[in-house]
Image 1 (cartoon, rainbow, N blue to C red):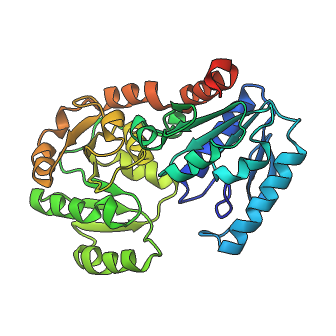
Image 2: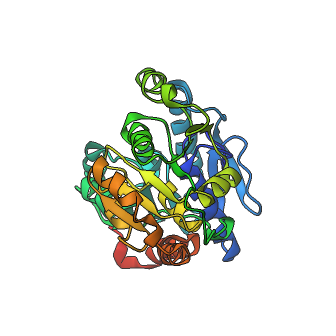
Image 3: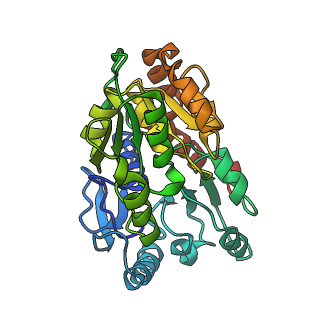
Length: 340
């Protein structure tokens, strides 16, 4: 992993959360697991090594030092593992590209095609790339061997809420950035006269802070539009469970969108703009609805009670529970035909 966020994270850190769950699940299955991640990481039964200090985002100096630490760690331990699985930077794997140990490079964010083409021009052995959606893989699979492995959550950590009142709130959960569409969620709430819960951290980027101050904060009245701030796992479970729908009005090609399956785990359906991975994550009339416009989102609010919340959770659990996803990764590691 990259430096900056310990594993498991207490708040922001979707990729770190997945890595932590995978480490625990592999350990439960009897595998010896070592984790190279930020200082402060601690997982029962897993040996953790520090790649850099806690503190997000890391400085350029910390990021470069992390590369050197990764190179040293992987080169010295290259004969000690059956599989090296990276969720960090591709450059970390440079010293062992042509070593016989099996390697999986997994992406949960946008992929640099230039880096993929460059790395595949080097001698490379026993290497496979994965992306967290077919949509993401389609944008990154310009060279090498690729497979889609979806993201996951531990469904046992989320509580199914089968019934919510008709006046239950809508919810928006995610970073408060324009591409996430919080402003659209507010518009939908106002037009449908619903309360809206907003959970998420405010981006440190200058343009995004301005976006929050000018387009989000003026609508927060703690009555109809309620800003909860960053939420931990317990709080997400609470607020998602009491909401009648999660609004996901994204304005970009979302690589996955873990918050969608967190909502489904509580039985809460999702209304999402059909961009990026949404077509793969949301199943129409079962776990929510896929739409294209704000007007359609407004109209679908009236139909959200048609979604059966127990079925919503059960259907998504079959696809996205950590046990299924960890087994998928292990099947890749055991299948010689998967590798180049």
